[in-house]
Image (tube, rainbow, N blue to C red; front, top):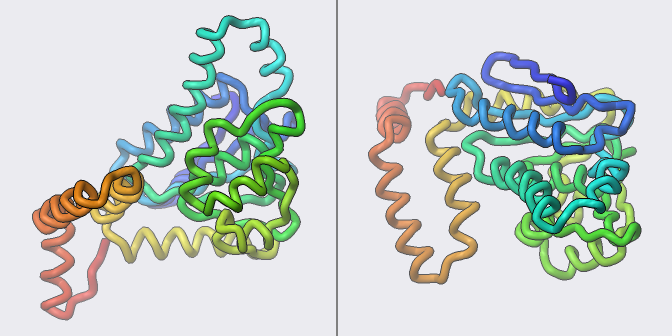
Length: 257
């Protein structure tokens, strides 16, 4: 692959953005490689947790602006196809079976901030800045908007998207975008230990069902949502992991996932 690296450590897969000379800016080929990597990880039962990180000084600067400039000569249909390509990447991450952790050690801007937003947990160094900066160049944060509105509230989304301002990691944490701020020398170990804890202390089947419900239930009307919740509750009872977990608990045995 040209733009990403992967590194598997037991049940943990690292997907590494590897275009440091362009601050990990995204183009169509980059998005294709990411979609393929997440798709393969989704189908690999040996992988429990995914860590998304970036090589170089930036996590990701978002869309490659030289690439976007070339697309301006395309038809609406061609631009829609390219935009849908990125949308499918974000959608695949949001509906993924595995927990995705962003390890942000450099700035995450525009579409790069979107990549972090779609992850379940974001760990960041204090020096990193986040921002949906599209409005400052006449563009819009269209695709990430859906996910940001689910991660935070409308007032916060308006503040960040309409101003395009940069916020530091601590402000991003208070805004609900960042899970934890960690010193640069400690973030690698802390993220990996957190991932290992999730991999060994949670059920793969339960995580997959819970992620699916989080993604789907918010758009449902109350009665529909409760019926859906009841059906998923019933489904979960029949899973192998649930049977194993309850049996181990009642036998006072350690549950090994």
